[in-house]
Amino acid sequence: MKIDINKNTIIIEANNLLKRYQTSQLYFYGYFKSEDILFLKSQNLKTDILKTINYLDQENIKYDAS
Image (cartoon, rainbow, N blue to C red):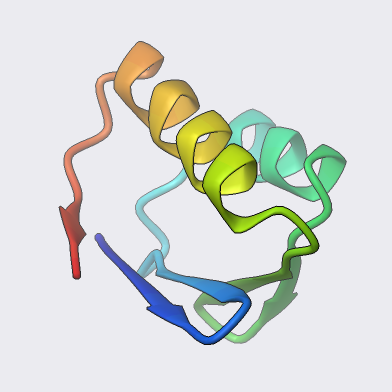
């Protein structure tokens, strides 16, 4: 899984690695999905990326961030 930031958008390339409940949690955070990619247009990038990374860490999901 890869996490990218483009301006104020967080992009997660999930490649179907997430379980349904994990995807649901990211939807709750405001992400939306297009194919195997999740997007979040953030108003507070620092808060949103920390919340996302903390959740992925709690779930023991490995990711690369750039």
